[in-house]
Length: 392
Length: 137
Image 1 (cartoon, rainbow over the protein chains, first blue to last red):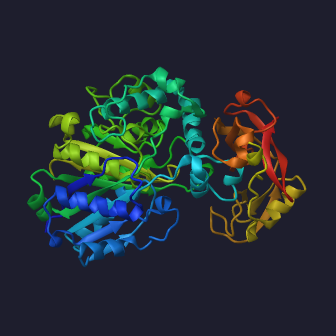
Image 2: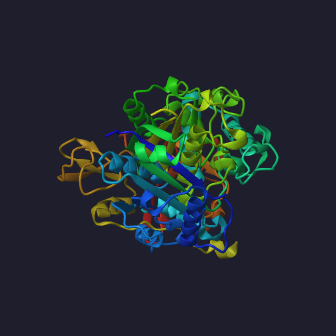
């Protein structure tokens, strides 16, 4: 029996506001679009993983959402669960699905996410701050998500001389990619410049408005399968070559280091399991709630030297036409951040690039041979690294 | 804004294992849990030592001095109780004894705050509690 596992099919809703759809309606729309885009039969889905749309629903009444979804699909899975690890949920779903498939529990597992972003102005930001910082030892100090991420950004500036302009360069690169992606929220808008980012309104130093992702709603589906099913469903699946996870902290002040935040530990496990090195990687899709993330994670993924992430983005290497494309769909910064489902977007794009179906922004066959997808949950708390490739 | 100004800042919940911590705060002393097996202080209070799982713990009053490990100047706060303070500093400080704490850096110009800035604990009255805050030395 082959141990190869692949992402055989992906689908993602366009990030937008969907006022007529609640969290569960969004899930159904994700499944409907997925089934419309790929010709699957009920037997093709043997497992199902879903995430409670807790932020979206304003509660956790849907902690059993996987049960409702598999019933609605009309299937009786051999493997199913509702799980949540914030933005790393879907990376970890792919990993859990791969383990189940390799163990022979199921031949295919459908990973699903749907999310809404609480309105920042309607107490939503306070709800989120409560959710992601320690209720007793952090929240009473006026925690605010951008200001928590900023702790990592400020420390990196101190240790390595990184500048606010270099963080802004990440947002500029993402916008260039988004202008090539009709599904991106900023498609058709003006290009960004470092000056425009720095002139946008200050949020929490060093971040200005355009250093922050765009809060929207959406969702996606990723079908993880065995080799046999992958080859039947897709002439070019995205083979899962390696994977790693690491859970570093919950609260940012407890992170042992702010310049080694856990990403590297997951990445090393992924490289090891793939038998690959950073030199083998052609492109990266990196979770980017804020501009700081791709910059510091390029270093932690060992795709550029420690302390050189700023120079990397400043050079334009990550942008269209550059040597090492990053976030080719526009990133959460310019594609849009779909709340609880945001951790799907970089997996969907990583798989699409490897499958060769990324449209105008598609990288060359040689430039999309092997890609790395890194996502994290919480305040850079827990990490998932996937390595996807054209050949199993 | 007057409505927002009326909103009280959050008062931390006092958990069972943290009662001595908050009692020391009332006396304007910073006391951290101390592991008798590791001979080390840690933060935040827990029922066991996160270094060795030992549950035979004591308390140690620490210097209250430390340095700014990282920080951000918050210009736009969605938290009603903090909106009146904008711009304010959210920081992680590293105590001389090692542990790091989240705090505000107060009683100074926000633009003067920098990484490695020496700071010392002070206490802010919140209702019937006092919570540790840090200010430049």
